[in-house]
Image (cartoon, rainbow over all chains, first blue to last red; front, side, top):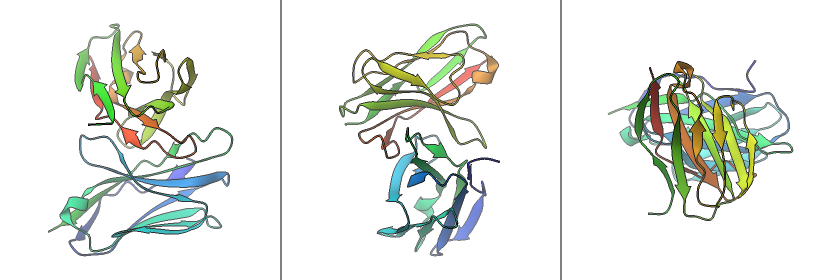
Length: 111
Length: 113
């Protein structure tokens, strides 16, 4: 079993919909939780990070962490075609803070 | 523009050849890393460095060498290329080691034939 599980998709939704992207993990030592966006043939870019449990909002994006369930989510409101990309979750913690990555979910927003 | 610069963007190698992927950052970040990305497998850490003169192995270090003689540069060397090293390689840097890498390069698409 992988330490971080993420459904690869693709997830296809109409423009304007609310999108929910999720990851589950097994290591309770993780403390920092990151979401990255990666456009085709580009490097990942850090969207948001959250420390421990709780929510964090940035514009149309909300990151949520539930440490009791070992489950993290990224919500995108009023989705736009420009949001079409692969979204990767990553997390760190423990003694060396090395990132553990999900495989990424490909998101397609249809105009 | 500030950020992480990787060269080359594309490369084709024959099995057994060696090459160096270059990576430079101008943000004075102590932490730099190299990843490879393969379909369905996410990003896997090859090597990382927490400062000039200090490097360590990641998840998949075999077949690769790194060095960190300056804060700015972190080259990745393929010693004897194999088809299994066909991948997209990313260099990244960050200022806070607890968090995820904040800056990624554009990537190098390497094909080994």
